[in-house]
Image (cartoon, rainbow, N blue to C red; front, side, top):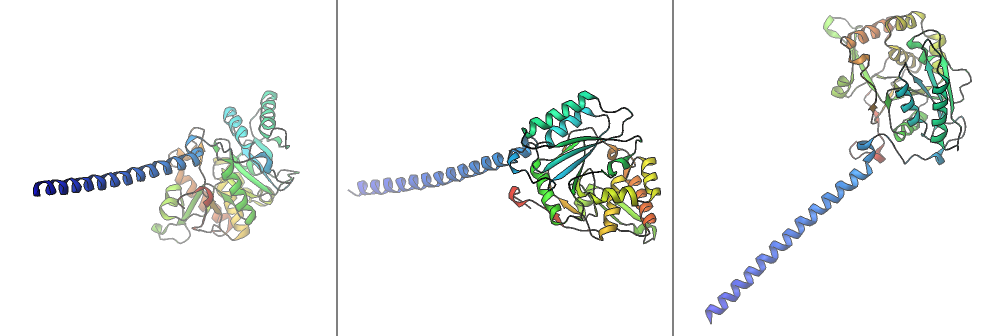
Length: 330
């Protein structure tokens, strides 16, 4: 009798152990399932970051009234495949009203290139809005050409962009909204810094800081015009008010036109630029920034321009604009 009761008790204890183990196993499986499901949701919602720059959330039904959008001013030089790729992408952005290609090549653009780009723009907008395309022809090959005043420009907002960098339309539209909140500021995706170099025992000698300086310190004082919004009035000011010696320096050295524009805007506003967080896609080969001595040349530019302006107008800041709707950690 006692043996039977003991066996029953052991059976019950074994059953409880098995039941407890089963429950724990079920909880672990449920937790793993939830983790996997969460990961799939994140990947699905962020797929554009992993698969490319196409953003299908921007609809041509969101077009703004004429004159309330922005114009793209794109600098290019004998990279027709990149130009076609960039125009094809940006033509679908909802706030875009016109595209101005800064053309400084000795030969004018071919009819086939112009026809192709106009066809791409029409197909991307599906005929629901008119995006004007123009080639701004320049006789002289100078980086100053990208900031020439554009007669008859209908929008106040200018998005200055190189032909070899692409941002999702959602990022461009967000940066445009940030610019609308501060239209006198320069609003861009590529921050750079400067600081006083005290190693030489001077208080008026400055050093140029690239991306890693910004990443390390969290401070910047410029956003490069390779991807930045600014008011069209700065094109007029650069054309008519920028010191001639600075423009000659830019032409001769084929560098630092972006720093010159940052100086111009900061001198006019007394305020820092605004850095917008955005995913950048480099579709071209490495540029002049990858060449040896690039930092030293940029440092030379900063000190030369500060001397021309009679002071250092650049204003450091640590602020960054982030679109929290599409960012998990910010």
